[in-house]
Structures are given as C-alpha cells and as structure tokens.
Picture 1 (tube, rainbow, N blue to C red):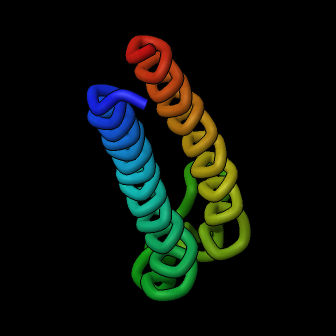
Picture 2 (cartoon, rainbow, N blue to C red):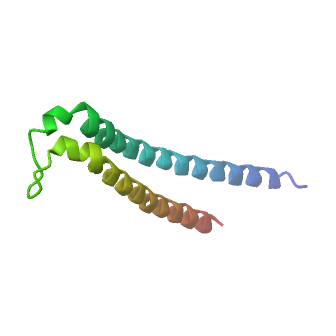
Picture 3 (cartoon, rainbow, N blue to C red):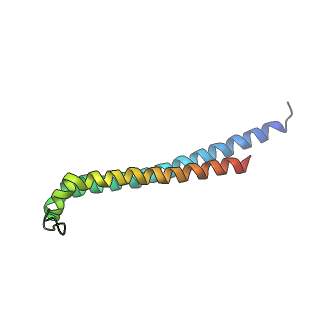
Length: 104
C-alpha cells in the first residue's frame, strides 16, 4: 500500500460523511418545519384556539371554524403535510444522488 493512497481514502470518507451530514440536516429542517405546522393545525387550531376560531364560520356551510378544525381540518392538514414531506424528501434524495454521481 502506498502512502499516497491513504489521504485519498480519508478525503473521500470525509466528503461522503459531509454529504450525509448535509442530507440529514436538510431532513431535520424539513421535519421541524412540518412538525410545527402539524402542531399549529392540530393542537393550536383544533384545541387551543377553538373558542376564538368559533366566532367565524365556513362560508356556505355554517360550520364554526374551530369545530371544523377539530373534526376535519387537522386531518386534512395532516394529509397535506405528509404529501409535502414526500415531495420535499424526493427532491432531497434526487439532489443527494446527483451529488454522489457527480463526485465519482
């Protein structure tokens, strides 16, 4: 084994580790933002601010907004959050794969 082989191997490991760390940092940012949205819609609008939101009604239905969030809105928001997470992580996966292909 050559002395010059060792630094190249370490450099590639460091670069790979850096890419993995960037990928997971991006994942954590996405998850943090979406968990905040989940908290806001489910606990905030569905429980904490129901009385305030009940002064408004959904046009054409007569349902109070706080009641609607507690029964339906938070579920619909959760489905959208899952969809957004899937789309954003697919994009992050493609970026990570392209970065790996470009580095080889």
